Length: 278
Image (cartoon, rainbow, N blue to C red; front, side, top):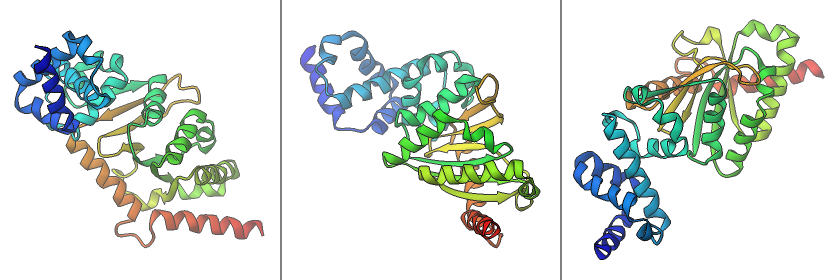
């Protein structure tokens, strides 16, 4: 009855969405009862506090995933994944087969909508990225993504980005000039930058990806054009994939077994460029 539903609301409002996820993973029947409140008691839901409504939405998405035989126990942060699912419901419901295996593919404009949209919706607090920088002029034209990065940092987020390039590209002014401009632009946004040369990296480290907190990794497979008419990236959510890419990022950032860190490399390049212009 309504009094029991209100008691349930009060009880669950004391817990975080992480606890709601655990309830689902360990007691599906309880979860279904909670979901039924969300589906059938709209008059009561309207009076629920905002935190509880968010928790109910998480449980509702959990039920939908359960129906598709999707096991969330291998996911790095199941409850955080569900917030992403709620943010772009259509894309996920069309890709349950892939999601059951721990990933979602993105193509064309959907790459931009995910990369920028997740940042714009304030779903994360920290981004760590490796960038295979073959065309810095193209990156200067990523206006929506660059604005999302700027707003993200203004609102308290942290971004670390490592540019990875072939050393001899610095001898080509058509590459060097936009690359220096890109560095200055990204520093002005507030991004903490690093630089690595290909001859410092293993084949496994030469990858283009974005880590969103410890929730998912967005791996670029085919770089999109300026208008995102083509291109492909894949978002991975399982704990094994997260650990793999986190390890790669920090190896590159710190420069394990190298003389300089990525940030020191970048600073050396800027100092060299300053000297050549004097």
